[in-house]
Length: 170
Image 1: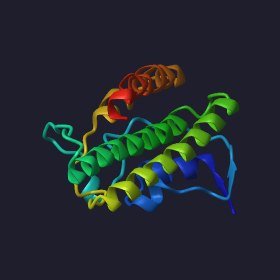
Image 2: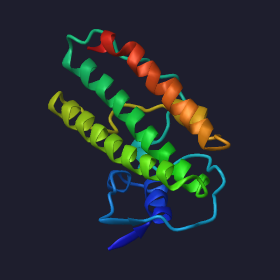
Image 3: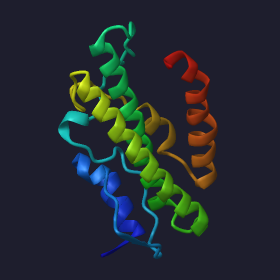
Image 4: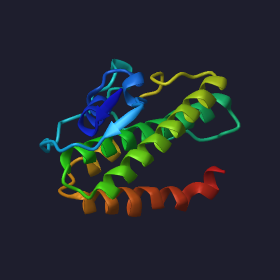
């Protein structure tokens, strides 16, 4: 079955369950559609709604529960990236096809990362949704005005920051 790029991105962005966020169509059609306005928030299950409280990153990774909390914190980063990329597809349908195909490919990679974080946290005793999640990346990037805002915000800022801290979390 063929799914339009708009249907694919809409399901990911506005879906209310994890299966929607992990959706991978058999075949994708890059058809034209109208751009959407920025929504206030992505669709999410009740257990993954953004917390209004400041969330503290766990410390002392010798404790399984703290490691699981950190993994779920990172899982939320992956989920936010997936949602922001879906928003990018919906907001900028006139972006070059190579750019949109690259976004779709990266969504599939982020979906795999999300699943790996969830699986590992589960082995340490916590499930996705048991730890509050923040909206930081959404708050920073969802107001993007063009594809270059996405590239600079996601790729050159947040992904680069992950590289800056990877040795610490290793």
